[in-house]
Length: 245
Ligand code: 1GP
Image (cartoon, rainbow, N blue to C red; front, top):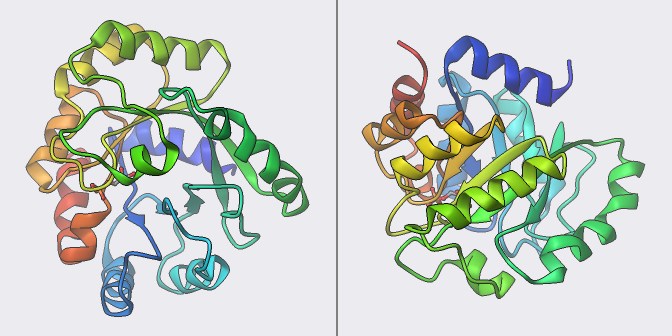
């Protein structure tokens, strides 16, 4: 089964899915090992791997290690064209639609395309929207783009619809790693009222109750990164609160 079809099955059967993010650059060796240990026994739906600046990291090696701990799909969440690996199960083929920097709208994607083909990686086209989150996040810094204002719903919804009309298959609303404020529930709710795109929410989600609120507002997938690096034991708590009881 294609990873995208599997994700849609998860959404249908479990209400929502949990996709913890591992940033191989940020996870110290110790926390990476601890996360792997938790993954062996935790009911996640897939693992995202990627980060804003990964150029010097052995992405293939990291993915191979993750695969020793779980049989769930490993999906690349790339920060640039160099983050492509034959060992992943799929790649989020992102376009940073919230920004106006051609490098992240299309250039990195063009640079990656032939390698993606060579590796026969499944591509999942994703409308990637950076939402203002109270502090300067690395996505904003590295992409040199401004996030969408969190209270400008009309603008956010317009971007979601543009992504849908382009034929993209999912929408990822991200406050950015370490966001002070996560994506607001009312934005999630209104997005789901206007668009059928499966919605991924991440950035600044620090506790399982907060994740549950995003799911109740309509989020289809929840991503957590930094909090898991700090406290890998929370993986199972997040899993329980995100999935339907
Ligand atoms: C960042 O959405 C992810 O792109 C995860 O964010 O590290 O804040 O959980 P956090």
